[in-house]
Length: 101
Image (cartoon, rainbow, N blue to C red; front, side):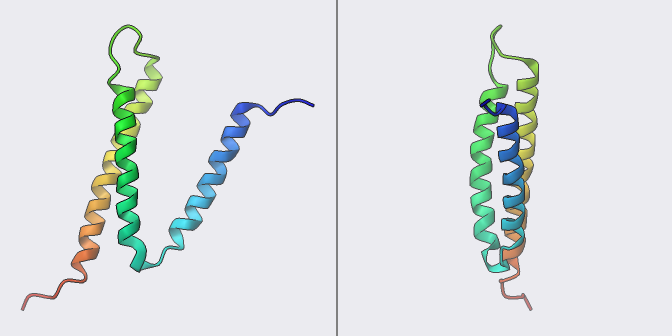
């Protein structure tokens, strides 16, 4: 009996996570959207810390260039996610404010 290739195992987990994430996000009611965005921003901030560690390694043992490039891409995407999450949350909270006359 042979073992499963680690790449195939990790790729299958990634595909399952994509499907589960898609169905979880699209089934969220509007009332829960703002708390969900807050949690998403918190998760993205953890990603930013990890990406900064991947990008900011200095010295001759800095690791492969593609690892630093992926760290930079993760940093950029997480920053956009955080900024967009705050904009969406601000807009949704503005919907509940009383209109100025």
